[in-house]
Length: 71
Image 1: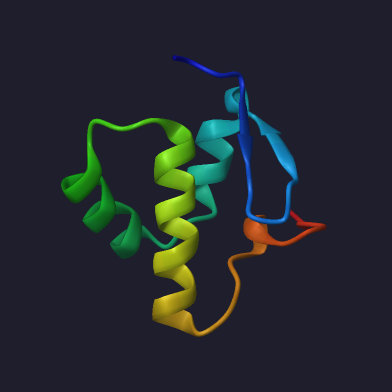
Image 2: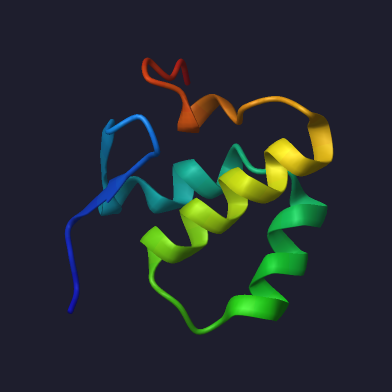
């Protein structure tokens, strides 16, 4: 099933058309590691996995996983 939205852990929705902009905010090393591990997967699955990996790596919530993300 394909969906047009990605929802972060706080319930904030992003249009899947923003995917390129979303991935540009990701740490490249984490993004590439996850791409190798998860592909193929949905944007939602990747977004959620990245948010978790970001917090584990940096000890803080990824900006786009916050309730009121600032781009």
